[in-house]
Length: 152
Length: 152
Image (cartoon, rainbow over all chains, first blue to last red; front, side):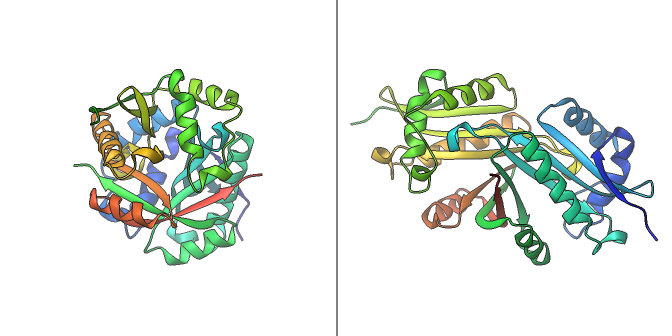
């Protein structure tokens, strides 16, 4: 049996668990260096200090089992509307397939609504086909192409 | 003959011209209300006051002929990297096909680089096929699916 899931704002103590989840991923394994937490902790401090950014974790039975980040972007378009951008959605590999991703994304949508955002948006690598089905089921329109340029 | 293009930070005086460009667009025409500038001016003030947000215009011969917005998002992923999100790229219909969009996006990439961002990213409606070719030519990878949920 497992206990209830709580989604909450992340603390500095959650950073090692979050970085472990970011690294434990087909794409993330090439991009993360969990051996040195310094850069991650510095980034956490900046996120934590910013009103428009919110790093969240899902916790169950005292363990961090999921994470996502929400950023509120202001804008002129759509009548000066704000939009919420979701980044870095991850669920611990040991707890996948249990609805935690859905729980996290639904939480982010409600948080975006509470903050007065008109849109919630995110991009997902074209290779994550299973995740796309899941996002469409949550009501998201797969309406855009996502472009990225890595700066060296 | 036309004069040189200057890309610069927008001021409150530019807001009417920016809103006119947002509305003069197949998708934007349904979403904007340029008759009441109040909400746009309030959004401009919030953007202008935020260090992480930058609204830019392209100006030529004293006229505003293009706009885009850049937002810097902090994050834990990719070793605590920041990313720059581009939104609301528009070029005045009278000056399309003259490379202004490329000028704006290149400017945004350099601004993102100057701000230490590891990635520049944006989404574009799947119907804007011509624009996608243009973004790929600028070096962007069309690697992601973009999901949006409108909140009522």
